[in-house]
Amino acid sequence: MISLDDIEDMSALTRAEIEALAEHEHVTTINAALLGEYLMHVHHGPQRVHEMLCDDIRAALHADDLPHARDLFAALRHFLAEHPDAARGSR
Image (tube, rainbow, N blue to C red; front, top):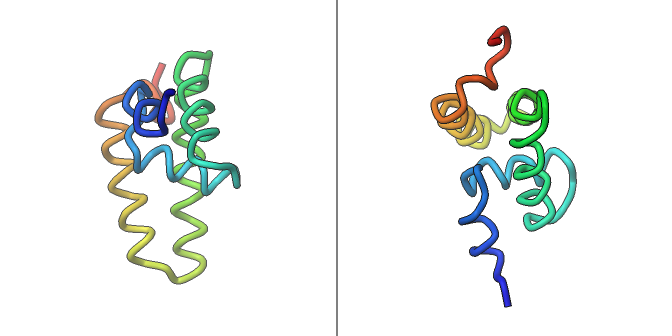
């Protein structure tokens, strides 16, 4: 049987990025991993992941949860380093 770790390991996203998607979409981690993998392979999908991460950072800051915002920002920086085409304004 395939475990959650197996699915996360096969994904183009890190565990932190998957957890951020799960938080944003209010879904389970496994569903977020599948959604993230799908989005990384569709037109403008990586940009959508970028937007979700930014939305999560804003929500954490709005809730005065600075430690969580820092964790999400670290995930965003890693995501953009690995997927520079996801940045706003990129072609």
